[in-house]
Amino acid sequence: MFRFSAWLQKKTDIIKRSLALRVALLLMLSYVAAMLVLVLLIPHWSQIAVVLLVLLLMILTQWMLLSHMVVTPIQHLQRLARKNAVPDALTDARLAARGDEIGSLRLTMLATDQEVQSQQQAMQTLTEKMDKDRRHDPLTKLHNRRHLYLEGPAQFEMAHRLNYPVSVMMIDLDLFKHINDTYGHSAGDKVLVDVALALGEHSRVYDILIRFGGEEFTLILLNCNQQQSMQIAERIREDIEMLNVSFDQMIIPVTCSIGVSSATQMDMEQMIPLADEAVYKAKSAGRNCVRHVDDR
Image 1 (cartoon, helix red, strand yellow):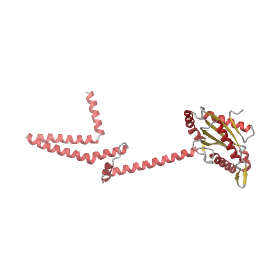
Image 2: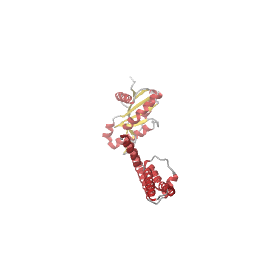
Image 3: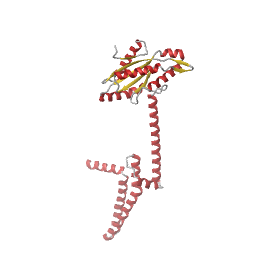
Image 4: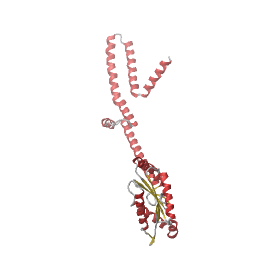
């Protein structure tokens, strides 16, 4: 008894979830009811058989019409709503041509879908813009430290897999507080912008150049060994020394101290402090010079 009840409940749930089954069940019940009435009212079995056959054909015709006009369009709309159907131009044209409630429902669903897609696109655009803003320094337009820690590890992992060297360069402007105090903070901002432009001339597409903070910049040179990085650092030092930033009819001299670390199988978090340590060596050596962390 319990098994039959569970089976019946299962079948009932299936019927409740299917419009087609409910329509078919309704037509079948109508046919059975008509058959019982005919058996009671018509005494001759031959007449009953003919009438039942005609009635069966009528019900089958009704089923085909209901399926074509109601069940199938609603199933198409259901698939459209769930977004898991392969686009069918013929089906879409048939639904579009309908002027009844189902055709109106299709138009409403398409309009809603277009609105949702438009909102999703706007959200994606806004998210990308916000992410871009969070990754860039508003003054120099360079990437910032957030970008470095998001993208840097992946670049280092690739370098480790390919076994090629990476060099980290920390560029610290000399006596920058003195520049701000002497010429003003606007002049200091102009210095940072001009230095950023000069550094961009030495950064390849696949390198990572950022404003690390304050007057300090970081350049990650991929596939670049110690000798190469020291040559590049020296060129950068010379270019910055030759900037002579012009601001409000004043010429502001600028120099920098550069620290470099180079390795083949070392993480970014290890190399940045080493390059920073090399900066202090350059400062101690009198500023406006380049030092590698391995220099003695």
